[in-house]
Image (cartoon, rainbow, N blue to C red; front, side, top):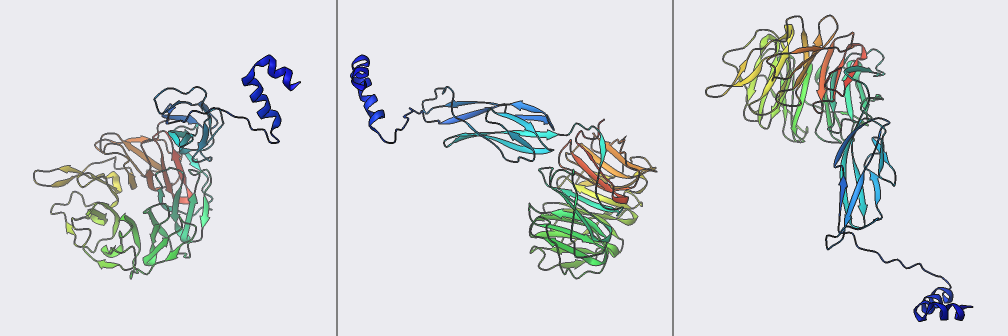
Length: 413
């Protein structure tokens, strides 16, 4: 039978039949074309949770010719954000941003996918804080991993953009007022009684650091894993230049300092009675403004650059920096005297949010660098104490009675 088939199909076919029939372990031989590069399309996309989008990929060989029907391997960098099928169909799972990776051999290309919930405006998240007041909040740039801190040593952590908040053991019962992370793993928390806490494992565990302070500490910021600052009651400033191994104590004022912010070695600290302190040498020395812009207490400050900074406080005061004749100057602004402002955050030089209390939880937004402010519906009944933005759309605010609110639309309904 094999001979008849060979005669019918020709000498070449006979050889092929012999190779297949004579081998005990036949192997299918396929001619493959090496893939030199891939181009994924579209390069970025935004979808809702539960929504889907199909991506395509063009594969090219070393001569730049398009390869038909290449074998592509698809992968999501975070399946908690989206999943992807072998056809290139991506489906949103949870809020956040992750990479879609297409590869063939050693060639690969990526697309950025942002997944959003369908909710608009500000909406309340379940903090599971059992009514404890929350005073500070911080999120990583991915917009999924964040922390909130508050009274009774409360530390809450989320890894899914706040859908679930879970408690961490803080090793203290002192009220905690502020939280800051220098990277994915190292973070700092400060609070009452000179409390300074550090984590080196992304918030899974916390330990107390001896900073030589007994004052209530109100805010903390790090400009580098080695360089950090905390401010608090009686005008205390704590400064470390070795990652918290040692701390220097300074008292540039007697007024309680409630906020601190840095851009490089330039920093501002603000506090009661309109106190504004500045430093140009990484906090080694501080100066007081020659001409105070207000006598009202300032509760928060954020610095975008060496020239751009914003502050907020009681009776709606919102000072901001402007370019002066010889140096940067502070100019007084107002978001309305009925607003008692506790926290601010600016994702850009012109867009910012302020939170506080005006009979209910107050959220205000500016689109002109703090010149004017517009109220937004917060859906929060209690005072809001801090706000943090990861970009122009996504922000979280925390407050009394365990309140946490979130927006993915810049607060717009």
